[in-house]
Amino acid sequence: MTRTRYRIFENGAPSFLTCTIVGWLPVFTRPESVEILLDSWRFLQREGRMNLFGYVILENHLHFIAKGNELAKEVGDFKSFTARKIIDLLEEKKAGTILRQLQGEKAHHKKDRTYQLWQEGSHPKEIANEEMMPQKLDYMHRNPVKRGYVDDPVHWRYSSARNYAGLPGLIEVTIDWR
Image (cartoon, rainbow, N blue to C red; front, side, top):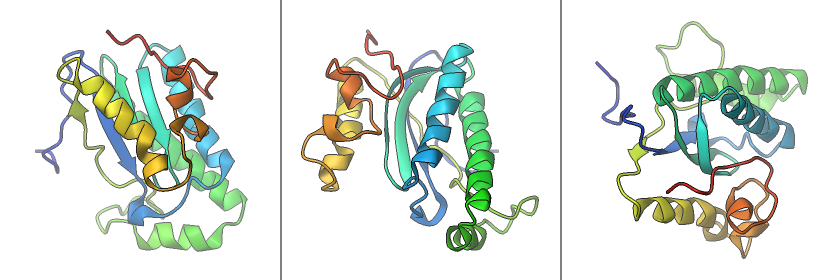
């Protein structure tokens, strides 16, 4: 039995996913923590385990659109790997305040760890038709604009908006999704 009503259906369709830091804590204010996310996606792409169509990373959550043969497993591996690496980074940087917060936000049933980085689940939404893909991409890319961080989505460094505008992005994405 799953803990959530959200599930990734392994039917080959892309999914729109959201991953949120516990307590909405601002973990991605450090460029090194964002690089861990990008490196993990690069690995999954290189190994043919995930096709990334778009993303945006904000200070406490991220959205991405991806597809893979075992997407639920790949998302689980992504979250597990990035959590371990980011917690290691925070320990190395002696980021005591955020580590204490991650410890305080840890779910009671997570007895096998000191900290919890990600909220459980990724709230997947299947991209069910051709109209839905541009809607979700626009929603993702406009997130930093909506928050008042930038005036134009292409100005947000941690987003695939630049890729879709024909500019170089931080990571390759598949823009030909049709």
